[in-house]
Length: 146
Image 1 (spheres, rainbow, N blue to C red):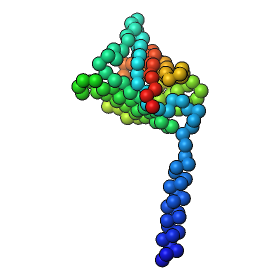
Image 2 (spheres, helix red, strand yellow; image 1 turned 180 degrees about the horizontal axis):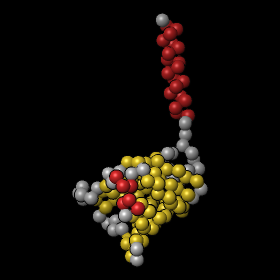
Image 3 (cartoon, rainbow, N blue to C red; image 1 turned 180 degrees about the vertical axis):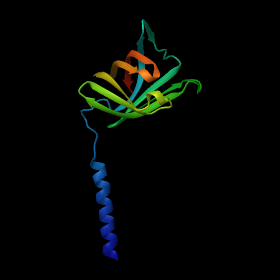
Image 4 (cartoon, rainbow, N blue to C red; image 1 turned 90 degrees about the vertical axis):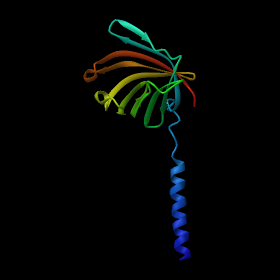
């Protein structure tokens, strides 16, 4: 009985040790928590700058998934969020939005170009979803929080 318990304990410890060894790709500088500091939307013949004085827009990126949410600083109106998976190949970053309350954009791929300058993430690209009536160019800038 003593040997069986010792064996089970050893297997458990080895299993835990294997999970701890798994590390994030250190070359993926996107991994972290980001706060939007600038957003520009070009749609048709107009350019809109997102007003960030009364809202926080946060994006969280790990090794395989991203999530974002928008929350007013003083209240809970206009809250929205989404999440999904992404691929990164050089500067080409493609988000696949899997979790959202907007059915027309669920599972849609959004291709972007990304670059890191110091603690700033710059993301730009064309959001084009015919089913949702979306066709706009965006430029977003985020500052890394963690």
